[in-house]
Image (cartoon, rainbow, N blue to C red; front, side, top):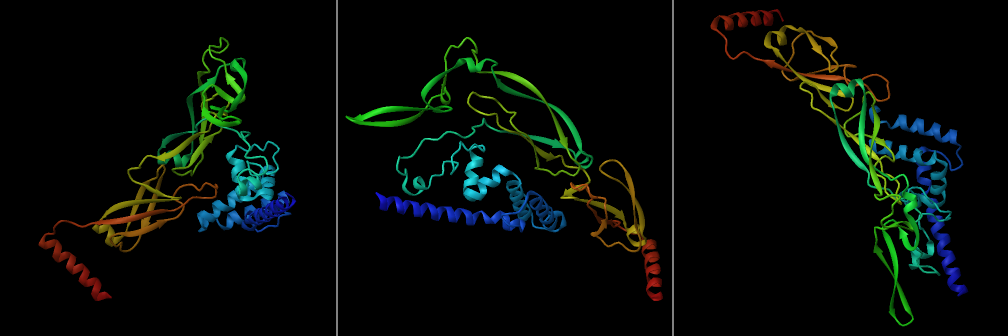
Length: 368
């Protein structure tokens, strides 16, 4: 027995060393030491996020990894989990909703169970994490103008909430191991008893079940309307989410899930968007293409501006108009507008027109 215990202890120490090695990754991303203060972490994040911001030519994946590193290291609880258990332990911690239950290895991680499927006391049943009802995604269709100017929308959301006296309808039930899960004992042979896990909707939490025909709360839930204010910031992009945490349906033994509004863009008849830039096509007559022109355009928000073009414009020429794109989410300026000019050639010319054009162009060529 002592030899087995020493072997298990050495394996556990090895797991701990591997975990701590993994934990260096987030610190490396921000370029800081494990002893960095909160102020140093914040400063490092600002520098790295500016360096790798996609709007400044940085890599979007790297930017997301830096943001994730800061999210963890700036939170004392998550940082402690990450430092002691590494990225895998952090993942398990978050999957449980952040509950630790005082377990020094957290998230159900037991080195003996991981290596030997039960350690000394067999696999323990755990249900100390936060369980949530289903999260909901709702598409929110917005015009390009709304993305440009920003928008505040008041909406109503209908959900199911717990009856006010629902707790009066709970009773102790040691066979319930969690919401919807019951553990029963079956004798499979003389002296041998097996635990069997099965679904039971009456179980609403560990050790608690719902009393049927409870007068205090005949229905577990009732319908409720809640008012939400959606703030769409200037320059937000399609497929981004605006999230309201913990506002979906309630259910005994569960925390409510999250409500996500997914931004969708209604196509604009003239402008197309790519990030912070706008693109449009404009047809011009041949005479303008040859002699230059001044063009008045109406922007997505209705304001008018003028584009001046000197000299000859080739077909499919692309012109960049600085700061006439979408507002940047950072609040620092605007993207650019790119106009592709399409030259409208006449279907036919009279002989007189041909002679005149030939004469003009010939004279211009001789002067050159």
